[in-house]
Image (cartoon, rainbow, N blue to C red; front, side, top):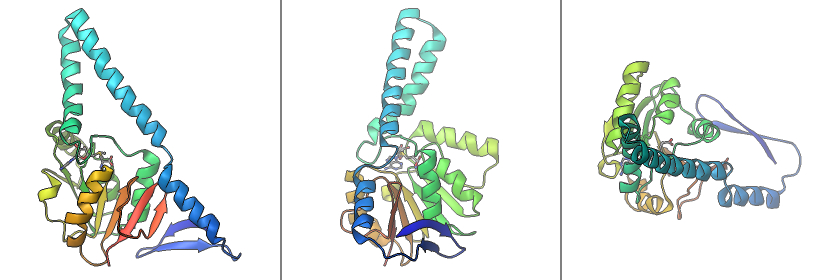
Length: 229
Ligand SMILES: C[S@@+](CC[C@H](N)C(=O)[O-])C[C@H]1O[C@@H](n2cnc3c(N)ncnc32)[C@H](O)[C@@H]1O
């Protein structure tokens, strides 16, 4: 039975107990992780909270006719808008701390590794990957999130890069690691258009949503790891 995951500089090590492995249990755990990823409820709650906040600021702006309330509503709306526009790929929904830690662990980053985040969001994965010494680039389609990332990078003097771009139009064939948190529909498109262009040995680390035809190497906390053959 697999009891823990740990990292060495070049590979992920699966620690095993010297007991007879229970294959059925392993399969069940995997199925549970895939069908009911932990933290999903929290993310749905977060989405509801965002929508409620948006509606509340709209109501407050209309009732009070206050400039600050209007300003706050516009900023919030701009943050949500790209999600609406990019619904076919993924709306803005940040990866939970626990999952981003798992993503970084499964990515097994070593210094100099080329990493892309397809839809950088608020840059949390860029930050974590850059801390490991990787050469990190995030693509972000949303103007408001892009501006936020540019500011964040400047304030933190970060080494990661951010490009305001549609990742479907970007070449990712030089990537060692690709991060994504996309909708199931976008994952199908990724499998058709992008996975084949990744180089041999490159890792795809996907939060929550799997590829449909490829066999994952690992599933941990609802994060899927694929290694290109
Ligand atoms: C679910 S969020 C994930 C953000 C971040 N990667 C994380 O894990 O916290 C998806 C992000 O992808 C961006 N996005 C969606 N479609 C895109 C596209 N075609 N090109 C670039 N960014 C895109 C959205 O604006 C959003 O910020």
